[in-house]
Image 1 (cartoon, rainbow, N blue to C red):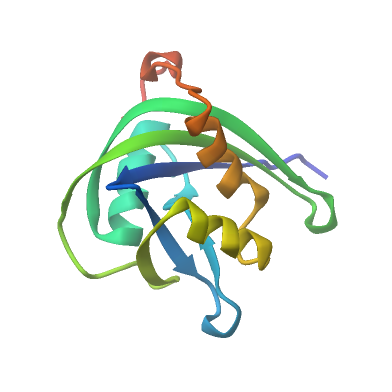
Image 2 (cartoon, rainbow, N blue to C red):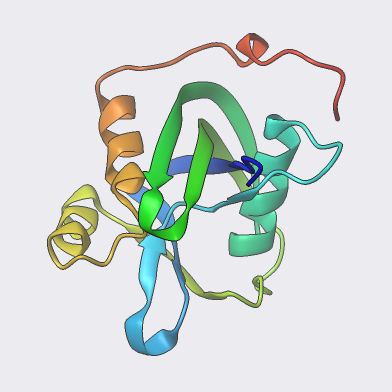
Length: 150
């Protein structure tokens, strides 16, 4: 079987000590995540980040730096995810319409996110890891990602 990794982006957006999060999935068993999603063909990680934030939250965002690139191996699902984690600034809310897979967007405190983690309600361990890495000062210039994609 051919290896087929999933390449995704996630945006860590903070304003007034609250993080922009999305609630997604089945309303009866929803999970919380940063605005995140797959990179589309011909799209750069930067552009995918901007698009995913807008689609999932209605917010225009500006990625400022790369926090890290994360690997999530899910052997039970035969999937591997490569996730570009960006720190982004909120610019302005453009629309209230959200992607069909998104239940709602929320501005949550770090304590609220940690409580969701204790309840097993974060999409993956990478959600809290991205926040912790940012709090620990991990920041790489956007120029680390090179290529001719838009």
